Length: 450
Image (cartoon, rainbow, N blue to C red; front, side, top):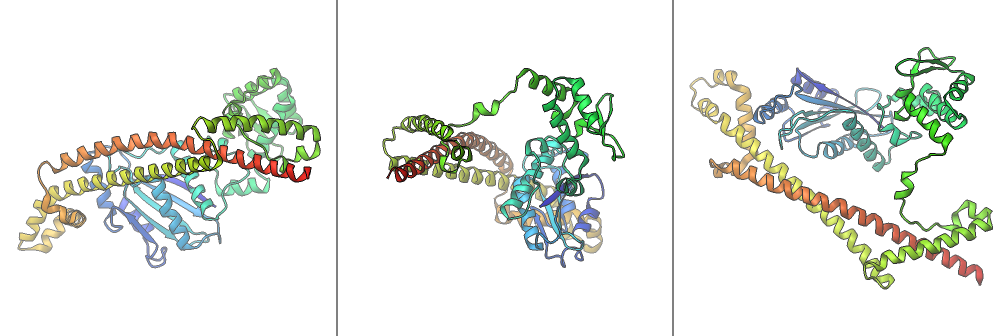
């Protein structure tokens, strides 16, 4: 499991990068990675990107920390997870330096990334939504690598509230969290109450002191401070609690999710209620027949008349989806590479005269001391451009900018296709699962009849 937090860097970027790159904390500097910059020149390159992109944002960079539970991960795996998080969240649009520290009781990653994108010049937007996106992406990568993630928490509500600290998570896991107990008691009170007064009485009876004000607050008998109910989640403000009580009392429970549930054939052999009730098993079998008829009707809409053709159809939809994903990634990489070229060409042109002056200077040491940062940026840009330097022309940047617009449009179109095709993949997967489940039940019934 990894805990994440992020904060802005407004000044002293070079000191922050020096700290995270400290060799004594990074296993003698072997656990340092960077993207579109060198870790020793990152501060200069971040500032240069901001200047080239004519950005006026106040924040220079963002500092993201990803901490792992003690003993759960090796330094190399932690570093790999951090790199994947950078790839997933920053999408190749921001320069960054990433290091893995092993000097404390727990392994943790430090990621400092430019607040300004070198692709489009847009500033990174940091808010609750972007933080919870980081949280979700980090959890998914940890899960893919066999690590634990936050459990026992409603993900939907969790994504709408503040991220939990490691201490709060441990308390929740141990059953000692005041918020967890308050949440449980409020949910129970809503189920048991027909109106607001009954709800208040229920909370009093269960040991809670209540403070009314702009936001209703509760305090357990052994709790030092009051807890505002709205801090638990959006469904626990006073307005929402009253609304939930009213909906429950009047029977107006909304189930939008049921309307979106795809037709599904149930495995009767593994259904507990079906094994306990013959009547329910017969009803479920009838529902399966109806849903299987709808399933095959959906299949026939694609002019498929047999099982083999159906499986070929499923395989083709999956192959098409993978191809669209690959095409989209290829286009996005081209956008990143082209934007990087524009940035380096601008840097090269901007400081070429200074570098020429350095080459022709009679006192190179004095000249270097005066223009060191600009000379370093020029050399980095020249090295990155390579053979392109010989092809530089006055209209090259406008040509590259036009190319980015074309690629961006292509990327947007591919994204539309990807979203539409993802729905098709989900649909055919459900149809395939329905077929497997139904045929399994049919075989089991056939064996019983014999």
